[in-house]
Image (cartoon, rainbow, N blue to C red):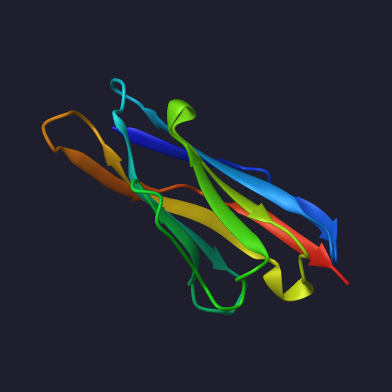
Length: 124
C-alpha cells in the first residue's frame, strides 16, 4: 500500500554534512499524509538505533549521540521527511532507514512500515 524510499546517503569526510530524504508514496492509491516518522541506523555488528523522530504536530526527538548535529523535518506537501546531518563523525557510519505511520485516508486508516535504507559512510 505504501512505499518508503530513502536517498541522500554517501561517503563524506569527518565534519561534513549530508541530507537524507525519505519519500512516502502510495502503491495502490494516494496517501493522506505522514503521522510520524522515525530514522534508524544500524552499523555492522551493532543493534539498530533510533536516531530521530518527528510527529505530525511537529514534535521531534533525538538520540543523545546526535543532538545538536542532526535535524529532522517534514515537507507535508511532498510527503517527505528529511534528516539533515551536520558535523558527521566516523561513528555515524551506518545504514540509515526510515520507518513511519502513514495515513491512508481521512477515516483513520494507517499503514506502518519501513524503507530499505541508505548507506552513510564517514571517513576520518
